[in-house]
View 1 (cartoon, rainbow, N blue to C red):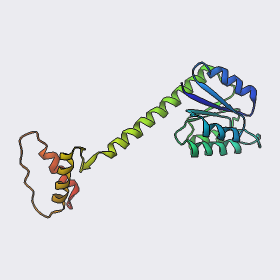
View 2: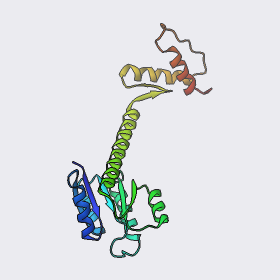
View 3: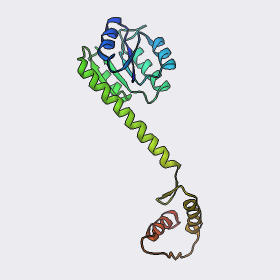
View 4: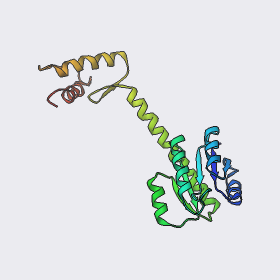
Length: 194
């Protein structure tokens, strides 16, 4: 079950969101910046619902922006959905530039909230998968577009690297379909005449 942290200085707003989400998520609550940081450091939070107007200056969005920056520092991949009564479009644009997953104006319908959360969690999962795939791809040995991790592939890449630097003609022999054209392309790409 995913864990959602609801951040709002008004207990009634937190309780409304809690009841709207408790059937699908583990819901934590925080009413100020210190409580947010404590929850992030001690709990496996998957998504944050953040009101921008928080103490000690609830009249401005400054504390909410500060908390957003702290969330980004502590949990860079954790999606943040802004839930606020602030209808200033400039604030909304600023939040989007800062990478929030979505921006919702109060009052919020429970079904809209659930849809936005599901979409943000799905996007975060896809981004994690993409990053893991990139890391796995980077672990592979490569040479000029050829990819392989086996010992034979690494040995071939080492020989090709030496050949690519040599100012000589290379003759590639082998049966049809063994990758001679791919090796020739890799030699050209990695060589001084690329």
